[in-house]
Length: 332
Image 1 (spheres, one colour):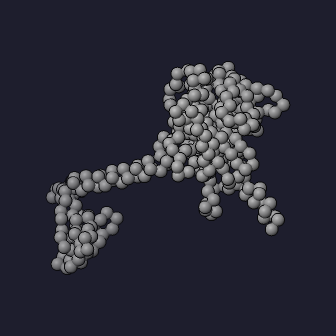
Image 2 (cartoon, helix red, strand yellow):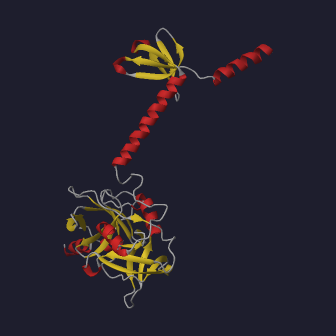
Image 3 (tube, one colour):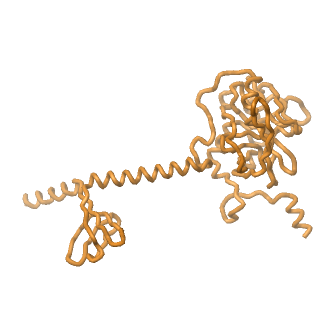
């Protein structure tokens, strides 16, 4: 009885000890790594973890034994290499790259509007379509920008006007290869990307926090009201919780007019705290902006709002075709 218990303990301890791994070098430079269970004159049985393989002897050129520790190190190295390759792939693909936009944890120092406009003006753009125009702002150097959904609704021909600052002068450049990346119709947001081959690295804005704002704080907007590009208007934050159509908006006395839609609302640290998107037409100083927290959620979950014309079978919700296309179809 004692002898049986001793044997059982010995087998148990053997199971806990690291075992050696063997590699069968096969013809045509193939190899199989695992634990050899049995060796016969005509074949070898090897456990590869998920199954047991029986390899004919005439296919084996060499058997190499490797310590378990070395095998684990090799496996760990392969896993690390795989992760590094995946990380490199994400770095090369700007849509999946970590740090898609910049949002510092601490607010920047307070500055005056004049100095901030000189720094931020290059990142604020004009978004043009055959049906009208609006504003937008670039969020990273790869040319991704935000605007309102209603600025591009029903349109497929989109161009972006950017004012590059060179030698203390502004150089106006129109980019026509603009792709819709993601849309949220219900919260009036759209993510676009400039894809022109000659596009440089772009200046971009920093996303702040609307939650950190206090009512009465100074804010300012940059946009293209009525097509008057690079127009700056200043005011205060009137309220942070104006409810309209089931959504909460920032209300501001900064003048907002048609053409400002999609442009940024800044705090005095030069951080975007909202996207300007509407005003009350029969009043003055009654402008509204989408809080930046909603914008960050949209950007963080942009895959859920992805827009694609290439695959009609995917689960994404598509826009109706442009009005001109619909009219043409009716005429036919």
